[in-house]
Amino acid sequence: MGAATGALAGCGLKKDKGELDPLGHHTGEVPTDKMTYRKNPTTGDSVSLLGYGMMRLPDKPQKPSKDGTPVREEIDQEEVNRLVKYALDHGVNYFDTSPAYCRGESEASTGTALVASGYPRDKYYIATKLSNFSPEQWPYQEGVKIFENSLRYLQTDYIDYLLLHGVGMGGMEALNGRFLDNGLLDYLLKKREEGVIRNLGFSYHGDIEVFDYLLENHDKYKWDFVQIQMNYVDWHLANETNRRNTDAEYLYNELDKRGIPGVIMEPLLGGRLVKMPNHIVATLKQKRPEDSVASWAFRYAGTKPRILTVLSGMTYMEHLQDNVRTYSPLEPLTTEEQEWLENEVANLYVSYPTIPCNDCKYCMPCPYGLNIPAILLHYNKCVNEGNVPESQQAENYHKARRAFLIGYDRSVPRLRQASHCIQCGRCVEHCPQRIDIPRELSRIDQFVENLKQNKL
Image 1 (cartoon, rainbow, N blue to C red):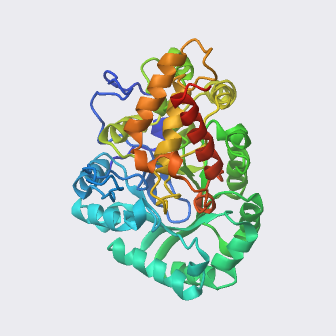
Image 2: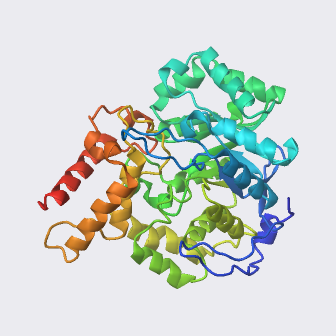
Image 3: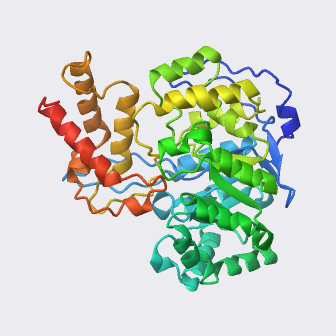
């Protein structure tokens, strides 16, 4: 699996990265034996700094239905197998999934791919979650059933890293109902004693009271790791991208002072730190022309010493290859580079009016067939490219109008567009970023109608 360590990663070795393809990914050779690893102080696990997030798995191409109704997506298992085997071959050994990912199919797909890889079970680490979000799943037996199903779907008799999923969503009331009052956390602690769970932690979204409560009781629960959202924008400006977020600087420092390893989610803000306005991309390229835009975010997250692994939802092979290069080995950021990203680049980023959608798809499926993430991401793409004109007097109005409307129809089938939202609000409770989705969909729909009728 390679023997590179954090110490080796700090030697500043220059890598032969090759040329960049049109998407900004490197095309040179991908190292197989230079992955950076971090040691888990509790178990001694040597964990790859790049972790594979199994939340955005590739789907098979679908032919549109004859009547225009939405076609159910299906995971491309053959491609997942290929990606997982490639990751293992290149030193990635941490795979993060959940019963809630990919329409409930991620765990089974992950388990199938890991078994198909041919690697022995002790050569990789499986992370999954107790995703009992709805009140119907809060009773003790329902939680136990979710955990036992995870073992079955993942084709394993133990979980390396088990997380209480999305604590903070719903505040202390939800934490009490999901894990404390029903005895489910006691059950998980017992399973850790038995070795069925090797490491127990939680992933945090939302209410800081819950985060603080769980860390204040660290002596009681002895958290082996904690998963937080961290990137160079959220370090100081989490509240600017989402009113309910907590600055990553606070979260990281609270873990650091207790010696708890951190697992990082959303190092790219759901891809938004790659699909950025052209001006910001040019700023990054001016600093290091040979580096991909994504590599800045991954180097930033990996430079923090308390981080055990950085998760990336690598849907495509070029994403996987680029990230493996970044961490094979890691070239840590200088203090000057970290401060430049946290301040200058981050402030420039939040000045653009994008919607804080991370494409997690927790809002899906919409009961009325809307493709909510595709709608929001198309809007963000047009913001980044300067194709959201404020009025007909804008210099590029006609070009931007055409780009927005044609791109919208190509990205989102007509029956799945914002005009079909009935404002039921069911999506809001599932959104970790706490986006007022119905309001945003209504705003986008009105903007589209104004563009169509030339009424801006």
